[in-house]
Image (cartoon, rainbow, N blue to C red; front, top):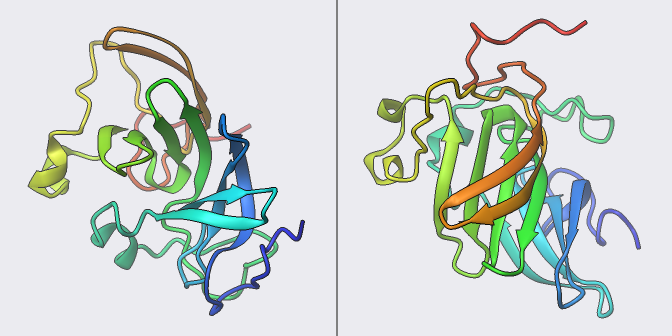
Length: 194
């Protein structure tokens, strides 16, 4: 299969450029991180039926999160496919973890220093983990913000977040923390790379 799903780069219609992650669903469909063909990249997921080679659902996170998160972003795409095209990588979606029991997905956005859970069928948010202060979120989003317990470290530029187990309301996840504040991470606890 062509990684562009029949599209090309900036200015095309529909989804294009598969990047970062694929999660297989129980029905054999794939959830894939894609670009939507706009000037904003790596901020969309699509459900692909690989047998029919058809996209059956698209979730554009510009329609889920406040518009200020992408319209005010100056983070340019730097990957080989889109560098120099003036594309905005406001989210840099890099993980999809689908839970068939709950029909929830856990997602990771490197460029927002944010991990969140949402119901896949309804697109309704369950929770958001970010060091971005509640005061900088519209009031309608504040109820989703997790309040860290003592000793909880916020992530920075994280990748690879996956559910390990769940018991009642306690969800254990594993993630790779790059520990580099990109947009909302805690710059005091970020450490320069080696």
